[in-house]
Length: 84
Image (cartoon, rainbow, N blue to C red; front, side, top):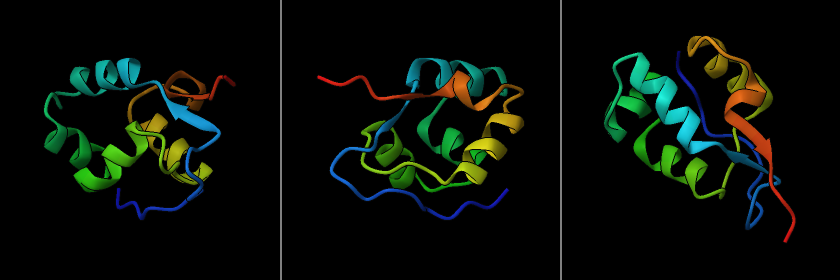
């Protein structure tokens, strides 16, 4: 899977990565380092870090493909950001 970075470029995305669950699912696939996780996700480490920091969100097609490759659904690894 090759992924290009797309999504919102707002200061904070309205959707956030559930990093704990994402990392757990990646580890189950043998990806335990940021490099391995980024490779599994089909992105570079910079994009992975931007997802984790809420700076950018992948398009729905990318989020869906990633969830399917991890054997889960989109809602399991992404959630709406809680308002302050």
